Image (tube, rainbow, N blue to C red; front, top):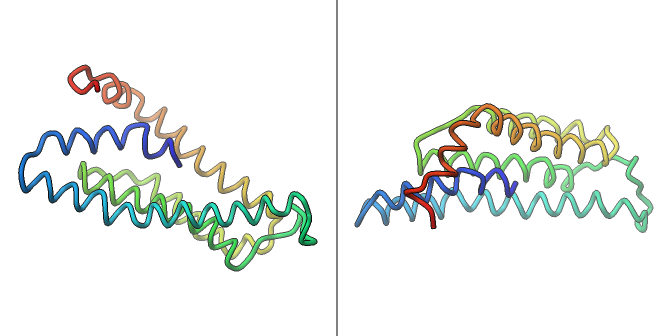
Length: 160
């Protein structure tokens, strides 16, 4: 989740803000760093809650094992939290750069579809699917947009 935000998008947002002045800059800062960030933060918190539940199965202190499914609130928290983060991230990127790529919304929808299925899968498998989904989208973007990433990350005009 960290990589999804800080690899390129945060740099693009910073540059979009730097290019503006006055009221336009204030409006972009207000819109981009408040509204879309709220679902991102809530998504991180929910994903942490779901992850805590799955990792709690490792010790088996509550009678559960990693072979047991997660369902209800923990499943919604784990899968829905990551999906909410991705959708908030899409909104943030759109507000700062007017760009939308479909891979993140698609992964978010797939993770939402995983919620009812999680009740039938071992919790470790559910966690693996969520993790693999995030890794897959990051690897796809890293490879698909490699040249653009390199330009954004190595732009000497914007070195701090």
